[in-house]
Length: 189
Ligand SMILES: [Fe+2]
Image (cartoon, rainbow, N blue to C red):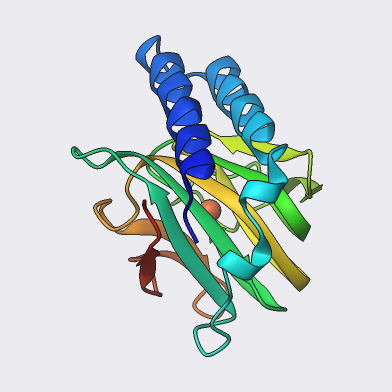
Protein backbone atom coordinates (compact mmCIF):
# COMPACT_ATOMS: atom_id res chain seq x y z
CA UNK A 1 0.00 0.00 0.00
CA UNK A 2 1.03 3.59 -0.48
CA UNK A 3 2.98 5.02 2.41
CA UNK A 4 4.42 8.41 3.31
CA UNK A 5 7.98 7.45 2.43
CA UNK A 6 7.00 6.21 -1.01
CA UNK A 7 4.85 9.26 -1.63
CA UNK A 8 7.72 11.61 -0.70
CA UNK A 9 10.25 9.71 -2.84
CA UNK A 10 7.92 9.85 -5.87
CA UNK A 11 7.20 13.55 -5.33
CA UNK A 12 10.92 14.38 -5.13
CA UNK A 13 11.69 12.46 -8.31
CA UNK A 14 8.81 14.01 -10.26
CA UNK A 15 9.83 17.49 -9.09
CA UNK A 16 13.35 16.92 -10.45
CA UNK A 17 11.91 15.51 -13.68
CA UNK A 18 9.69 18.59 -14.15
CA UNK A 19 12.80 20.76 -13.76
CA UNK A 20 14.74 18.72 -16.34
CA UNK A 21 11.82 18.87 -18.80
CA UNK A 22 11.44 22.64 -18.31
CA UNK A 23 14.94 23.17 -19.76
CA UNK A 24 13.95 21.39 -22.98
CA UNK A 25 13.72 17.78 -24.09
CA UNK A 26 16.48 16.26 -26.18
CA UNK A 27 18.52 13.07 -26.13
CA UNK A 28 20.64 14.33 -23.22
CA UNK A 29 17.75 15.47 -21.05
CA UNK A 30 15.76 12.22 -21.43
CA UNK A 31 18.92 10.48 -20.27
CA UNK A 32 18.87 12.72 -17.16
CA UNK A 33 15.25 11.72 -16.56
CA UNK A 34 16.19 8.06 -16.95
CA UNK A 35 19.02 8.54 -14.48
CA UNK A 36 16.68 10.19 -11.94
CA UNK A 37 14.28 7.24 -12.20
CA UNK A 38 17.16 4.80 -11.71
CA UNK A 39 17.86 6.70 -8.48
CA UNK A 40 14.22 6.30 -7.45
CA UNK A 41 14.36 2.58 -8.25
CA UNK A 42 17.29 2.21 -5.82
CA UNK A 43 14.67 2.63 -3.09
CA UNK A 44 13.32 -0.74 -4.14
CA UNK A 45 11.83 -1.55 -0.74
CA UNK A 46 9.30 1.24 -1.33
CA UNK A 47 7.96 -0.57 -4.42
CA UNK A 48 7.46 -4.22 -3.42
CA UNK A 49 5.99 -6.50 -6.04
CA UNK A 50 3.31 -7.51 -3.51
CA UNK A 51 1.87 -3.97 -3.73
CA UNK A 52 1.56 -4.21 -7.53
CA UNK A 53 0.05 -7.57 -8.40
CA UNK A 54 -0.48 -8.36 -12.06
CA UNK A 55 -3.90 -9.29 -13.37
CA UNK A 56 -3.15 -12.18 -15.70
CA UNK A 57 -6.52 -11.87 -17.41
CA UNK A 58 -5.45 -8.58 -19.01
CA UNK A 59 -2.83 -9.49 -21.62
CA UNK A 60 -0.46 -10.40 -18.80
CA UNK A 61 0.22 -6.82 -17.79
CA UNK A 62 -1.17 -4.35 -15.24
CA UNK A 63 -0.37 -0.65 -15.13
CA UNK A 64 -0.47 1.28 -11.82
CA UNK A 65 -0.52 5.08 -11.85
CA UNK A 66 1.83 6.54 -9.21
CA UNK A 67 1.87 10.21 -10.18
CA UNK A 68 0.40 12.57 -12.74
CA UNK A 69 0.03 16.34 -12.94
CA UNK A 70 -3.40 17.96 -13.16
CA UNK A 71 -2.65 19.07 -16.71
CA UNK A 72 -1.95 15.42 -17.67
CA UNK A 73 1.80 15.91 -17.88
CA UNK A 74 4.49 13.81 -16.16
CA UNK A 75 2.85 10.44 -15.69
CA UNK A 76 4.67 7.78 -13.68
CA UNK A 77 3.41 4.20 -13.70
CA UNK A 78 4.51 0.82 -12.42
CA UNK A 79 3.99 -1.90 -15.00
CA UNK A 80 3.58 -5.31 -13.42
CA UNK A 81 3.88 -8.38 -15.63
CA UNK A 82 2.96 -11.75 -14.12
CA UNK A 83 4.85 -13.81 -16.66
CA UNK A 84 4.71 -12.93 -20.35
CA UNK A 85 3.74 -9.84 -22.29
CA UNK A 86 4.69 -8.18 -25.55
CA UNK A 87 4.14 -4.81 -27.16
CA UNK A 88 4.67 -4.45 -30.92
CA UNK A 89 6.92 -1.69 -32.30
CA UNK A 90 5.31 1.63 -31.31
CA UNK A 91 6.05 5.26 -30.52
CA UNK A 92 4.78 7.38 -27.61
CA UNK A 93 4.11 10.90 -29.02
CA UNK A 94 5.96 12.17 -25.91
CA UNK A 95 9.22 11.32 -24.16
CA UNK A 96 9.30 7.99 -22.34
CA UNK A 97 11.57 6.21 -19.87
CA UNK A 98 11.48 2.62 -18.63
CA UNK A 99 13.50 1.71 -15.54
CA UNK A 100 13.76 -1.71 -13.92
CA UNK A 101 12.69 -2.82 -10.46
CA UNK A 102 12.31 -6.60 -10.78
CA UNK A 103 12.73 -9.16 -13.55
CA UNK A 104 13.89 -8.51 -17.10
CA UNK A 105 12.16 -6.58 -19.89
CA UNK A 106 13.76 -6.89 -23.30
CA UNK A 107 13.50 -3.68 -25.32
CA UNK A 108 14.19 -3.45 -29.02
CA UNK A 109 14.87 0.00 -30.35
CA UNK A 110 14.15 0.58 -34.05
CA UNK A 111 15.85 2.76 -36.63
CA UNK A 112 12.47 3.39 -38.26
CA UNK A 113 9.96 6.17 -37.59
CA UNK A 114 6.22 5.33 -37.77
CA UNK A 115 4.91 5.44 -41.33
CA UNK A 116 8.28 4.72 -42.92
CA UNK A 117 7.83 1.05 -43.72
CA UNK A 118 8.66 -2.10 -41.74
CA UNK A 119 10.61 -1.39 -38.55
CA UNK A 120 14.30 -2.24 -38.61
CA UNK A 121 15.93 -3.20 -35.30
CA UNK A 122 18.68 -0.81 -34.21
CA UNK A 123 19.58 -2.41 -30.90
CA UNK A 124 18.26 -4.68 -28.21
CA UNK A 125 18.78 -4.24 -24.49
CA UNK A 126 17.45 -5.74 -21.29
CA UNK A 127 15.97 -3.41 -18.68
CA UNK A 128 16.47 -4.78 -15.16
CA UNK A 129 17.07 -3.31 -11.72
CA UNK A 130 19.66 -0.53 -11.92
CA UNK A 131 19.15 0.07 -15.65
CA UNK A 132 16.70 1.84 -17.93
CA UNK A 133 16.05 3.09 -21.42
CA UNK A 134 14.90 6.51 -22.65
CA UNK A 135 13.01 7.55 -25.78
CA UNK A 136 12.10 10.74 -27.58
CA UNK A 137 8.57 11.18 -28.90
CA UNK A 138 9.23 9.65 -32.35
CA UNK A 139 11.46 6.80 -31.18
CA UNK A 140 10.03 3.34 -31.85
CA UNK A 141 10.51 0.38 -29.52
CA UNK A 142 8.98 -3.00 -28.74
CA UNK A 143 8.77 -4.84 -25.41
CA UNK A 144 9.18 -8.53 -24.72
CA UNK A 145 8.86 -9.97 -21.20
CA UNK A 146 9.20 -13.58 -20.09
CA UNK A 147 9.28 -14.67 -16.47
CA UNK A 148 7.61 -11.54 -15.08
CA UNK A 149 8.81 -8.01 -14.47
CA UNK A 150 8.11 -4.89 -12.44
CA UNK A 151 9.24 -1.59 -13.99
CA UNK A 152 8.73 2.13 -13.87
CA UNK A 153 7.21 3.53 -17.07
CA UNK A 154 7.36 7.31 -17.11
CA UNK A 155 5.98 9.57 -19.87
CA UNK A 156 5.87 13.25 -20.60
CA UNK A 157 2.09 12.96 -20.86
CA UNK A 158 -0.63 10.77 -19.33
CA UNK A 159 -1.19 7.70 -21.53
CA UNK A 160 -4.98 7.91 -21.33
CA UNK A 161 -4.97 11.52 -22.56
CA UNK A 162 -2.56 10.98 -25.46
CA UNK A 163 -3.99 10.68 -28.95
CA UNK A 164 -3.79 7.15 -30.43
CA UNK A 165 -0.15 6.11 -30.79
CA UNK A 166 1.42 4.52 -33.84
CA UNK A 167 2.26 0.82 -33.89
CA UNK A 168 3.44 -1.65 -36.49
CA UNK A 169 0.92 -4.40 -37.23
CA UNK A 170 2.96 -7.37 -38.42
CA UNK A 171 -0.16 -9.25 -39.60
CA UNK A 172 -1.31 -6.29 -41.72
CA UNK A 173 2.23 -5.23 -42.62
CA UNK A 174 1.40 -1.60 -41.97
CA UNK A 175 1.53 1.14 -39.34
CA UNK A 176 -1.73 1.60 -37.45
CA UNK A 177 -2.83 3.50 -34.36
CA UNK A 178 -3.93 2.26 -30.95
CA UNK A 179 -5.21 3.55 -27.66
CA UNK A 180 -3.97 1.84 -24.51
CA UNK A 181 -5.54 -1.61 -24.32
CA UNK A 182 -5.81 -2.20 -20.60
CA UNK A 183 -7.23 -0.24 -17.67
CA UNK A 184 -4.89 1.70 -15.39
CA UNK A 185 -5.12 1.22 -11.63
CA UNK A 186 -4.92 4.51 -9.76
CA UNK A 187 -2.33 3.85 -7.05
CA UNK A 188 -1.69 7.48 -6.13
CA UNK A 189 -1.53 8.32 -2.43
FE1 LIG B 1 6.39 1.91 -25.16
